[in-house]
Length: 334
Image (cartoon, rainbow, N blue to C red; front, top):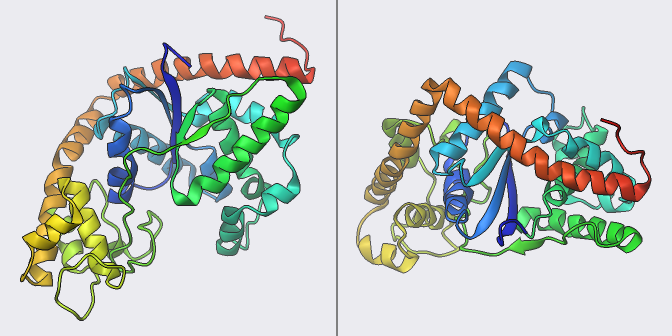
């Protein structure tokens, strides 16, 4: 706990350009948490290394994601926004905690199975131990709460298991994090296949709406969104395409699905898709404008990175030193 506030930790991978699922599903909600929690938001560039990346592109993507955090409304004075790789304690603690994690636990992780299937030519050790690094990201800052989606619950459970195992041996070293269940972020699906989550890595560019897409591009993608052969705008799991579009419209307007059904009662899919596209495009304008300002102000962004890295390092190193002492590593002579 810092300044009588509980600590909240979250991160996004440092790859690609963020899409509206990242924005409406996570970033918009993060902005509202800084008054309630002491927030640490990392750009997870170490996690990105499990797949071969172009070095220049990875550096560019990491900076883009960090600037997007700020453009979306995260105040770097209230929130600690930093690169994971700039705080060596993440990697140092990960090695120690690898020694307190069982192979059987890692083999059961769904994400390891999924990524191994997708990248059969590069099933590296990092893919297997990825959840340990993720656990250390959280434990370093003694996080009380972690916002998690359905696909991350298994990782948080492992984090809790590792922390409880270590505490059982050495005493109360780590805070045991809880899942943060706040206002549900929109679960936004692909526009081309509404049974799958929207993904930065989707090869079909019409399936993904990026936060930095211009208005014409946003509207064009929504016009091409997959719906069904019916014409009723009803919020139903039997109509995943329309359900997804209603979810997106609700995320952009704050309306409830029932209100959207009434608003578009008797209207066709074409009119609805155009309305969703225009609404989303308008909602993204301030984010794109702020991002463009940040791109031009290198000194300001560099200053934020420096200050926030120092803050993150201070808290991370406090935990790391405690762990090193507990397991018997020599004190570092300054």
